[in-house]
Image (tube, rainbow, N blue to C red):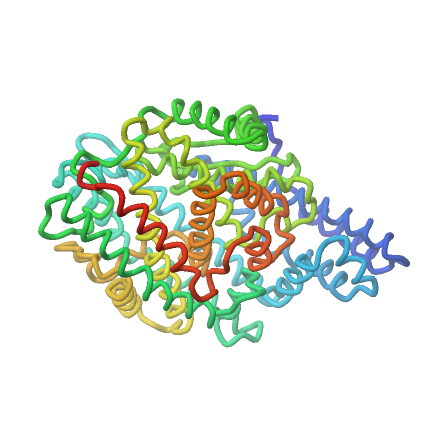
Length: 564
């Protein structure tokens, strides 16, 4: 079935609650492990159906936030999703305390029980009102960003649409376009800071109600970080500061020199070469056609997967008015179908999104045999290994998209990974500060962001752009608003993905086998278990970062970037 044919009808919560109550009673009264397992599977069918409906509504709303019907459905799910979670609570308690738990763990995996126990720690009927309000505030932020209609050169653009101008060869155009984006956030600064202040206080209140000191500890459990903690993350941040920040700083110095600039201002950072950045040599149709060719040739597994995605129209790629920003991948259980959402705008990022989100979707497609809710997806940092590694695994086909600019793209892509990691660290450290100090003022929050930038991103020079120089860059980082603490995941995963880049350079067949292995187990493994399965070195292990960066520095040093 095509995505447009997927049926959506708002479920009856009362009917669902009644059905679940009967099934939970079945689980509790089971006289054998096999009987209880069968009852659990009936409940899984209920849970996955509700999740499917929720995801269909969410995707269609994000494709067009101006659609009145799905806007109302989005409001419904903002309000009712905590109520559905409350109903599920009874089931979670039943299986965690089951007399047949060893048999259930063997059937559904130990990891399922680890994350179920975590779910019980971070949800209670006592926090339903706060969760409902939190959902509404997140939607308010997303709609505010999607509402951007910025006039430039006689046309109206949303934030994604301005993307090509922000990396234009003409420095004045870059400056104008970047300042227009910054001005949008400046004009909406009060609204953004108000939304965020409410979110922080709501989240802190939720954590306190459930017995946590603050939202930091609450979030680590919510994100199912079962085999590492905030102290290990703090140590990882320190390793990045010592080993990656100096390399990133040198890359920015090289960039400044090849651009012939005295100062590299913030609007220059994404512009890499005087001849212009590498760009795809065609439109979305061109990219999709070459994407099909690429995945057909990569492996039999990717060929089957991508043909399915295209035939079922499970990709919405181009930016348009009213469409939410960014890109993501989700999954519809009832149809065993992943879905890719993005905002193509004619930049190299279009290819990054295609390969990145396809990495997520490929993992989901290869885990379709898993019918247990919460186990089709891995934990978030594991998910990002699938996506980021796919970006490098597809390197041999980049000439299809970039033609004569292929080496320019590879240089920027690999160097960009090094440049990104310190930024990801700033986002993470910022959130640790925010939720450890929930009463901090907006001014204090912005000042702390700027302090972190100076520590990890010392190259950042905002010139005369006051809103950014005073610490307003984080307004545009949606994850900070929508999925708290989901950002260190990207940096941990990037270190793992770069190991796949290294693997594919030395033994492509073994590298692919290792990658396929981690895509076939869904969420049945914790992060460090998945790292081991993929024959990777843990990012927390001393020497891991250096083992990757040394090969990257060697690769980049052999390229004369001044000739690109």
